[in-house]
Amino acid sequence: MEEMIKTKDLKYKYKTTYEEKGKTITKEITALDDINISIKKGSFVAVLGHNGSGKSTLAKHINALVKPTSGTIWVKGMDSKDESKLWDIRQTAGMVFQNPDNQIVATIVEEDVAFGPENLGIPRDEIIKRVDAALKCVSMEKYRKNEPARLSGGQKQRVAIAGVLAMKPDCIVFDEPTAMLDPEGRKDVMETIKKLNKEENITCILITHYMNEAVQADRVIIIDDGRIVMDGTPREVFVQVDKVKGYGLDVPQATEIAYELRKKGIDIPADIMTAEEMVGAICRLK
Image 1 (cartoon, helix red, strand yellow):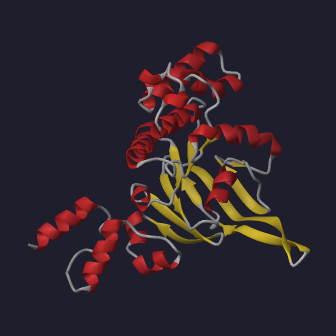
Image 2 (cartoon, rainbow, N blue to C red):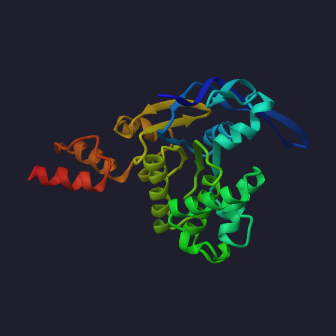
């Protein structure tokens, strides 16, 4: 299977300046420290980590918004340090951010979705086809003439996703896309992400702090202090409850309950991930 993202000894450092006791102090921060990963085309990967762990910095490397201090990241075989490839990389790997208002630029939905392809110099007839397809893919075609300002948070985020889709990326990085949404909005966006991955074969990389979202991915990567500390399927990762919590993260609620029941001597599977699995396990106990 083709590699969509590959990194080798990826390291990123930046300097921060602050005042302390009347003196200006400059400190070097290592945000990413020797990251080595391979993400296959068509996969759905969730990236977790506490605030400041480096997960959003990794996301920005995938879209070449920042460049490595050392090491290499390839996006569909293109080295992000190659200036001549930056435009191609950003077409290949789209970004969806947590606040859709920061990504929506037009006053009408269909015009906003058309904005990206227009800037790529796509012919008008092709833009119309892309806008139609993108809005249909995120179930927003009936809102095409609406003002984005009048949409709900979840609907705005789907418009933002459609704007990225219209540029026909092979990969989309979602940087905490549901952080500002209510539960219904989060559900809608997650359904859209899964649809893009399974039906359109788009590689989806989800940066999130919601464990119930991470469970829906094929693979979970946990970053702590700029290093990858856990990597596996959701079951392989979350069953290690104490280890996950040691990195300042939670586990899915159903997994937590199973963990506590097992501590009390109740014979229930440790790798329960969802409420449905929990109900089934309890019924089998009877």
